[in-house]
Image 1 (cartoon, rainbow, N blue to C red):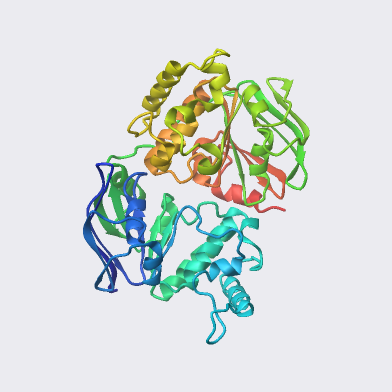
Image 2 (cartoon, rainbow, N blue to C red):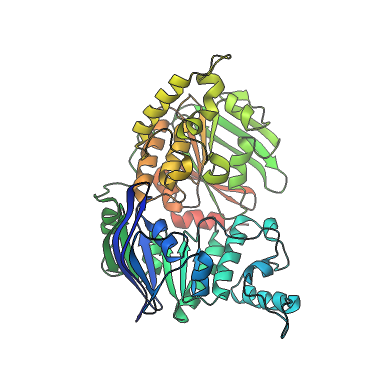
Length: 496
């Protein structure tokens, strides 16, 4: 395979700190080349240089043997480099068809006017070919996140790029959409398209990558063919040490019931759901898209209005009104979408840590306890080993793993009875995952009842004492740790 894209001596500095150090790397025609490493390793910075978002301090980029300088992402796209960033790039008020053909709209002959009929027809053909069940006349803002992601992938394919960069492309996708994405990847490779693929999901790297490059602390550690590594050796290269146990063991004995859910229903989302959670237990919730599992977690915390049925906390019936009421009653909630729903990205670390406990812990009604805020925030930074320049740092400047730790630390500053977690390690590297799992276990050992919704089955199997499986809005099975396997979970998740 011939080299399509080559990087020579690429270096990048932010605020005096090197984030990429003399990177030499070549990408071949028709290969899927995975970039892996911990959060902050330099992966996203590297692809932003390739795609024209950032400009390097040193080094050169070659495309098809010729040196290139991309002033903007648009110039990179015109040269044949299409990028799917983690944050969806779209125009919400435009239709699916208009977004797919953005910048490449079919026009009437010798006219600047867009041929809307052909636009819709070509978009429908593309969507059908990719196996997507999406109405191309729908406005993007009306689609769920996963469908919007698929539209963006379709747009990249429509641009017929020679290089397609995918940054965490399976985030927010269900199993069916992931299968569609992998079909698209096969088609791209058959057309000799080069794919640069960033993912924290090791199973994707093993099944898809022809070669993998490991970055650590801005340096290139190794580039390996797919027969030159296994999971253990790859993780060791990523984190610089051998990870002995991703899912640390935890002593758990059946204790008293903390949370009891009785005949809970919410419209078409789920019906007649009953279960309980014990003190010190980590209870997993599993299910495919629209199974109801995720809706149950949100409903219990008061994010979906008042449901039918009852929820009891330590024997007392909860008044499910809104999140504020739930917090006052002893509930904590770690959202799956940290960037838009969980964190204040333009605020500093202190504000993000203490927001949920301001009234109870950090004020005396008349005045804020600023000194205590800083003191407790510093303790949490040390406890969670958060990499930061200081408490003044904005959350937008932290890596995904460190952002997730801040969100977890927020709920560790006060005493809660139940912690509900959605996708607790989404978009987090394997080293940070291990640290987050350690702290979840410590919270459970201290007596907290933990409910964990996750679409990553290895995570559920490794962390949970029991797993509830949902399908079609109903609770289909409650599996003990001994009964739970990927096969048994999927068997119940597919029941209608």
